[in-house]
Length: 195
Image (tube, rainbow, N blue to C red; front, side, top):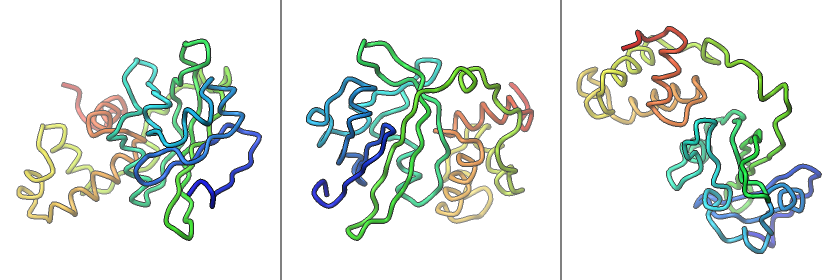
């Protein structure tokens, strides 16, 4: 795939395949992270970036929710993450995920740029980006009560695949990486009662 795909950008960008393996890595990204293209290409993207959130929780890992959503064709919003810098510290970055349909299948791009002071201090919205449907609200409440997708499907008499589709919609609405994060954001927004 590396021979077929050429990416030229003044911004830091790299591509990865459906298996999360880095295919391209540009000079801007090399300067930003201190990781050379030779070191990055062929490695899992999560191992190369090793990004965390502001609490220090690992975001880049083999089971990355954003990568899974992008592979399944869902739009993934921009994230603010802490990415390894050449000095070993972590630097705040805005990361956008873009899915591109290539002749040989989908290719995924991560576009990175340093978070500006305004982006770093920007307050989180109190409500999710999108409103939940009635069914999504019902499923979110059941997730908060500790039920898994199979139990929810049985309780609501739905197919488990349907419940999982609703859960994906909830994750997208809250720009969340996990069901736990979606529940926490819903509680912060007052959509779910705080325990």
